[in-house]
Image 1 (spheres, rainbow, N blue to C red):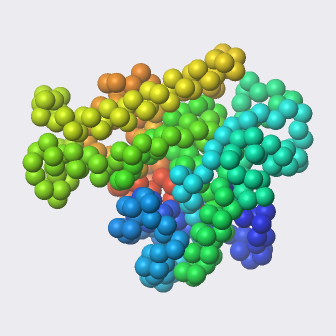
Image 2: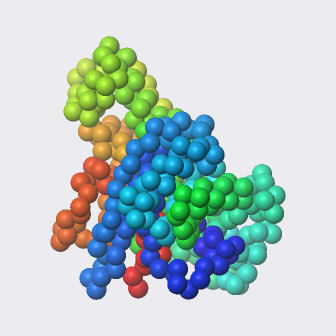
Image 3: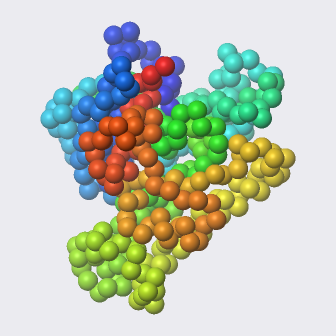
Length: 365
């Protein structure tokens, strides 16, 4: 939500500057700085710090003194100040709607007036932001928007946590929207699915014109796969983790019967992906938009700390009809054929949200 705090906490002009993208993931905190140059962007400071508290999805990190201390130490060590920070996807409500005959200056008011039609919280207790979804088929009288809503209490708790650790949050954005900013090429109006394959779980996003319209979570991630490998191989978690990354899923084709636990978990992600594909197709058919080429899902883009697992994409290519690919997180930052990024390809998949956050206020015209 790149505009969210400009509406509630106006910033002094001295703070209107590019900031470090700061993402709190489900296993680690990742940050990256993008510096403008005449030729595009140059990667400045970046890093990753693992914190075990983040693996517990039920934990409220904003009230965890140890985590605040961790943030404060990180800020001091890396000399971090102004940041664009992520907000948790599982606390947000996402929806898309069409506004008819609404002037661009009145879009925010129009959404606020209708907010309680879409989310189960009163408008006075909510903070929201929106993205206008460009479409070649869109009528001038209609404006399609993707909206992200969070309880005000959640946003304020994150603001207070960062400020107490010495950071200056310039903006907040739901993690999924930040990921879309990174992995969907700027100007691409087509609809895609993004799968964030994390440690403690996975999230599936439907994205159109760079805006997140829908999300669905699956409680299957890298940790669950490691546990399944340990069960199937009858080895320790440490050995299973090593085996998972050394061998990946490539071996399973010839030894399916010995990996029932692993395949069961992968099947649950596959089934949810197919359910989202079916839901989207049905929704667009009912809306009589099935002839709009922008609405057809063109590809499934995988990112996240576990997305680079050998053989993962090959598995989904077998069972999902829509083409699957690993994300290019640098697509809006630099040309990897001309400039080698300072982060390896596999590792970069975990930095998608941080890169999108750094791009939020670092646009090149």
